[in-house]
Length: 69
Image (cartoon, rainbow, N blue to C red; front, side):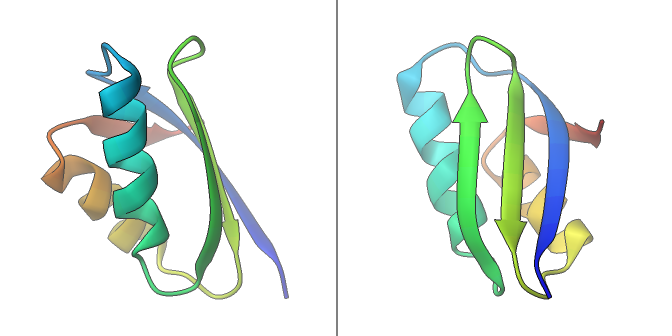
């Protein structure tokens, strides 16, 4: 079963931020894709059975804040 998560992200200022968040989120078990937008300050995460809190924690570990849309 496919799962999609939409997030608002604060703290991003450049393309490096986008890359850091994308990489961190894709390392979470079950995540297959992460589309992070600097312009919209958002992310759409998709995959199978992944833990939402693990995704939020991965983003926070990189120094950013994320909340569910």
